[in-house]
Image (tube, rainbow, N blue to C red; front, side):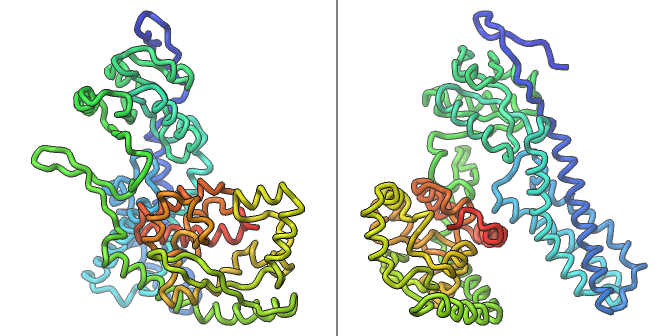
Length: 483
């Protein structure tokens, strides 16, 4: 039963938002999911090891259960049950840390109990790696199934109004996986705000009223809605009444967002923005991961490259490989290696096709790609759909010209479309895969692609790369947005 409806200023009745998120349900389901994952994965790893003929002594393994069940405790300390969804790279990092701590406790018990010979080290290792992979997958599956339920996530009260409030509400409603459900708005000075009515939100006259109605709500304080002189006072007011306050500054729509943390500087609030790309040690780590994964996959990749090259030769005349000029790091020109997916006189065919078809010409000018490209061969169509045409670029990775993950390499004609983002683009090595490729690829407009490149560069981290690499596999298998 909803509380009695309060009234807006000037006696205007208000309609309460029907959404009643229940954070405790979300938290409980995530705890149960994490617990089920660590138990099932550990059991599966031990069973696999037993089937391999290692002679598992099953009677000793239940003793590890209390230590493995510490996972929800560690995850809670790391803030993984807050009711709202963390950005994927941050969640992956924290889930990895939580699982590692749980298995470290179990391993310490084995060591100090002097029972190491009774437990399979291989099963232990497989269980740890399996949990790191399965935990984020299980959470994502759970969210996609339940995010549209009214009780999923946590309620959010918007402190502010106008266009900024409309944009925030629209974003949260379009992305239910975030877990923040807008339920009410407290406009500046309690004045009626048309934007809240248009968004279908309850309009509260004060913070106290909002807290009374939604005691567990997150407060989203939009500094754009307040004058500079009011902003500081509004922050103090909000933090004194709400359990959780998300302060959204005017510059929250651009730049680094993932790796920002608050700092107390002699009583003054500061925001520490880490630009990981300027950290030489992190860049070296990125390069080391590139080399490790590329060389480690060589035994599988080389036979595949030879087979595809032979197929291309049989499908159409000409070399199976070709190079393209692209702009790389520091604005230097480089030549990327790819499988040939087009006929030999591709440029002439394109010129004639665009000249004869204005619609195709407009599509080319907009996206620099054609959905029905007349230049593509039969083998090339398959290679593009599966992204296997990019495989030879591993050679560019070994040469240090590209990275496994990064912005898509562009040609000179695309520089103008990047605008001010081009300076950011030249700071990093282009990648074989990237945020654009795992977010829709060719179904994404060019301006959206540029914005994704900006986001990746400003928020880069090793965890971001790991997340993109992991997401690349299902995207390639499903051929999402590929043509």
